[in-house]
Image (cartoon, rainbow, N blue to C red):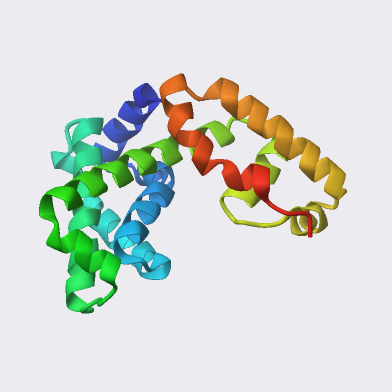
Length: 198
């Protein structure tokens, strides 16, 4: 979804449109879960955190003036809720404790994760524009972590077709992502290239 479309959806959402809320949820959910999981180290609890933040978004709908304010609210709320999760669960993981101890470095790390989450959102948006079979193969590989054999079985196609569609998808994504996004996206797309045939 482009920013101009997002602005229209936000405008509808501010007027109480539940379908607009669902579109915003779909647009931001996976990147925010990724963002939270990088802080908490727990993907399942991160899903709960993000869902709770979206409940707050619904309650705050009239106060969100533009896309920048919405993104700021989402990422700040998810960050704070994720940190509260660490604190309340007394996570002892050394990596998390290091991040919490190094406040300035931690904020830098958070910023990097936000950038990666936003790039991830743009990748998902670009994947949604791919031809149907290509989109399914890329989604199942990139978002669900499935191997070519599993995708072939699920879609009723050959492993060779899966691999061809995967390479076609990568090629199309390279053309559909802006150059500045692509430079960050390439390492994130590695699973598409390196997944094994099993």
